[in-house]
Amino acid sequence: MRSDMVKKGLEKAPHRSLFYAMGYHPQELEKPLVGVVNSANEIIPGHIHLDRIAAAVKAGVYAAGGVPVEFPTIGICDGIAMGHTGMKYSLASRELIADSVEAMAQAHGFDALVFIPNCDKIIPGMLMAAARLDLPAIFISGGPMLAGRYQGRPVSLSTLFEAVGAVKAGKLTEKELSELEMAACPGCGSCAGMFTANSMNCITEALGMALPGNGTVPAVAARRLRMAKEAGMKVMELLKRDLRPSQIMSPQAFRNALTVDMALGCSTNTILHLPAIANELGISWDLNEINAISDRTPQLCLLSPAGPHHIEDLDQAGGIQAVIKELAKKGLIDTELITVTGEKIGANCADAPAPDGTVIRSLDNPYRPEGGLAILFGNLAPGGAAVKQGAVAPEMQRRTLRARVFDGEDAAVEAVLGGRIAPGDVIVIRFEGPKGGPGMREMLAATSAVVGMGLDKDVALITDGRFSGATRGASIGHISPEAAEGGPLAIVQEGDAIEIDIPGKRLDLLISPQEWKERMEKLELPAPKIKKGYLLRYAAQVSSAGKGAIVEPEKGCSPKCD
Image (cartoon, rainbow, N blue to C red; front, side, top):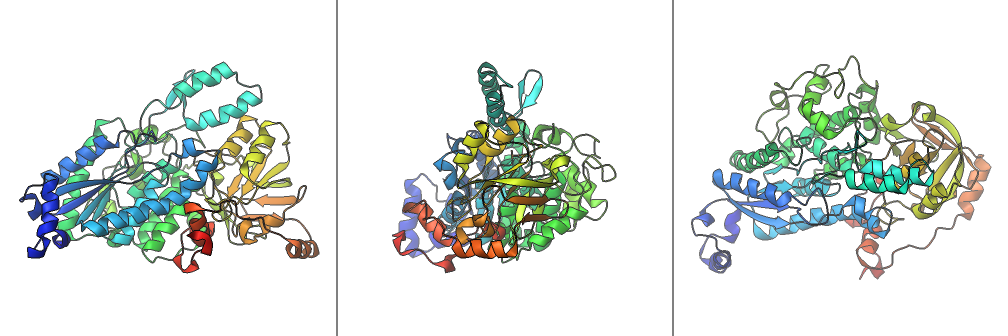
């Protein structure tokens, strides 16, 4: 056993003594040590209940002959961090989570790992760690929140962000807003729509790293606890078979995950996280392949914020396995890949129901003939930009708009809520990329304000920052190279014409070559916003969004980092 390095032999008597100090029995030290990576905390609704999940996991590990050893990770609630300096730390926390799991697993010699994430950056951070360590591993999320109810309709966190703009526009009263904020998030779990957290939990299932149901079984369901026990038992099977993440997360598995991503209409953040996970396995990533997969994959679901359904509805309709089964009918899924169940994908979804025609549509009657996400290129985004095309109104798919330029999100939100943005405008938010932010903030406050003010069919937003999975409308992010690296976004001026062509996969600034040349020659970049601490080090080493905003150690670190 790998754990023998900390418990076997004469020289390990001091190590065993430390285990005994914690109450471990000598017989337990004869068994495999299974790390239970628990991201429970008291600041994220999706994580407030994870101690119950961890207890169930540990029961499963014990039942299958292992010894569970629980340890924590950090976690940031993107909703609470939204709209202020805290959001700069959200994406950057992904690397901290991966690094901390690596440190704990390597320092203590675990034989296998069970990961318990639930929300935005915790999931990809843990998947990166699982890939990097390549120990037998399985994921069990905390599950999605149920949708709230307000005035007879389902609501969620995105409803509330948009309601702020509605109050400013006089479409909603402050009393109604107060009532809505009490109703939108009714309990524990990851926010109820196909936002980033649920997108990543569904994709983890599609990758083969979690049991069927991981992405959709509600947080409050007893099924979730039974699944957690099964995950604890299953990791012992993975250990006995020596089945590792590198054998499960193959290049074909990532293509499967992207296909499911397109069919579900997931968050644009998945395009940041999947390359980062693949990078840990030495798997190269081509943004053009995203478009290729999107072009051949119909969007079968229209989940909030793009449509009326929530994750609980998807679960009732058969969940991710039903989606996979439908996609497999036309060869869009490789069903021969192994998963953490010990079975192939095809076997896992064999008993899944047929599409119900509403929450999950058939391949012959999809919501859209193409997938939910697209990568745009052009002179404004030579390294690519991401858009949730399935959540863009038809009239905004092709538009030439007038640039309104803001060097940061805060000023843009103020302009929207202050009524200074008009139909035909495109809001340009720059210096919010991985390096320039630093940390690549989500622009949910800005995009929700646009929707709440009733401008989402007349106004677009483009940025080198990123978006929440709760974002809808003509919101184009991840523009690469970012403005802080001297990318073209840095030379856009107030009033410039910008052409958006989502079907054509183009994003272009309409100025002459001479004007372009002159602007680039005169370009002066602002000084870094953060001058100390973790974000300074992060900014020095982080890559562009087009590469997954991964940390590249070869970039070194600024002399000021220490």
